[in-house]
Amino acid sequence: THDQEEALTMSDRIAVMSSGKILQVGTPWDIYDKPAERFVADFIGETNFLTAAISGMVNGKARATLKSGATIDATVAEGFQPKDNATVVVRPEHAKLTSGKGDLSGTVENIVYFGTDTHIHV
Image 1: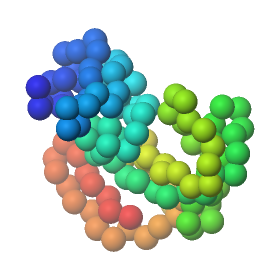
Image 2 (image 1 turned 90 degrees about the vertical axis):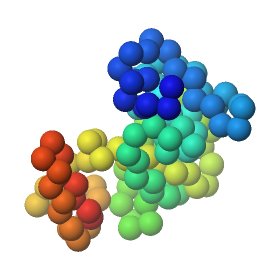
Image 3 (image 1 turned 180 degrees about the horizontal axis):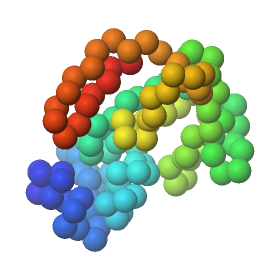
Image 4 (image 1 turned 45 degrees about the vertical axis):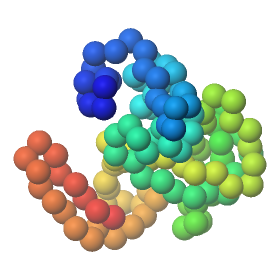
C-alpha cells in the first residue's frame, strides 16, 4: 500500500522499498522510530533532519554535536558505525517546546493550527 497510516496500523511487518530494492524490513515501530537510513525516515511520517558531528558512542547512543554547538545523545540505527558526520532524525512529536534553556534552541517563526494538530515552525 502507499497509505502509510494504513501500513503502520494494520501490519505486523513492513518492507520499505525504493527503485525495486528493499531498504528496511521490520515492525511498524522499528520502521518509524528506528529507520535504517535517511530514505526510510523521510518516506515514513514527518521528519526533521539535522546534520551533526559524531564524537563517539556513550551507552549505545551517538554523542552528536549539532551545527548550533548543542551536544545531544542520539539513538542509533542497528549497525551504525561512528564516523565524522551523520544525520540526526527528529520526529516532531518527540520534540518539546519549552520557555527555558534546553538542548536545542530556536525562534518560533510561525504557528499553524490544524484542529487535531498544531505545527510550530522553529
